[in-house]
Image 1 (spheres, rainbow, N blue to C red):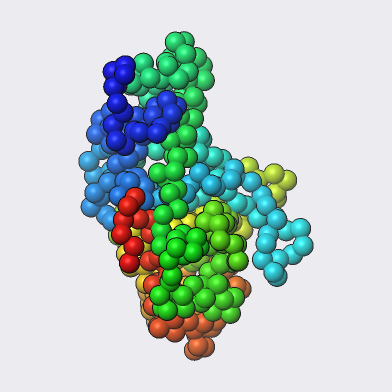
Image 2 (cartoon, one colour; image 1 turned 120 degrees about the vertical axis):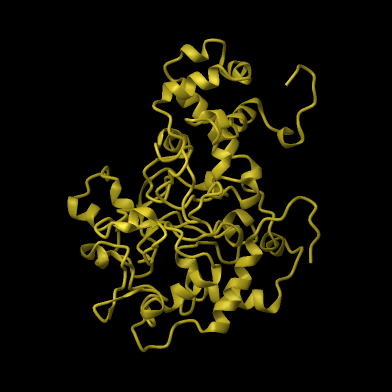
Length: 389
């Protein structure tokens, strides 16, 4: 941008550091071959989710034709509120006193500690942006049209600094921490502020969402009851859970019946944790925010569900009607078929609504499921100036 020139509309209000992060985030030269940027798979119109026009809806299209990512692209919406990866005290009412559980971090498996560490992943992943090294990424930025901005932010010696990649990653993290990634601009936010009312069905869905004997969604998709501050309603506690999602046959890796996504146990660096502790985390994935959930499908780490209603119905009937979700093998319903058999015991079967058994009444009936979905639709951020209904 020339000196004295007005910033572009989508750059207004950004600091030089944030603007540098935006430039990097949107730079399609930063893949090998060129053509894919961070924004390609994290589209602003989809709450910074999206799979880059992939032929397989559940997976992102990488920079090379026919090469797809490993998992459904997670939203970057509200991601800056996630704490660093670590062990926190379990908050569930029936938790063992002093029990520690993993929380925070980035990606479905928490393998990056924070937003800065997260930047490296897609850039160097062969199935995504496919760069051979951090140095290769730095060289592309150095040769680009915003190298001067990078020097303005970090100094003329930036590109000879051994920490140059980390500094550039910090700029991306700064951009991802701007209000455009967390505008708190949904109908629900205006409800909290007293500017709008929920419909009867939305209000019923919200009550069911919070009811510990019905949806019990608040147990993982957390919010602070009674608070009118939108920032107290992030709809995730940033922990990990074993949902036991069905296997998605559209995922190419799943054509190998011996392959299973390890989830959280891909990490081995749990402080003072014995191997058995890590093994007990296999098949657990990070609890995503439900903000903007209506526009961030497909759903779950493997993108197995295209319908938001199906996700809620799966939660409610996974254990009462497993035949609805899992295939038959040898005449029996093969529950939790996307997990290696030894890890079936890691699936959450204790908390409501997962505490049901075949033949029992689900915690939620069809009308209640519809009401929860109606409430979830209120969590979609609206563009500035959008008319309220």
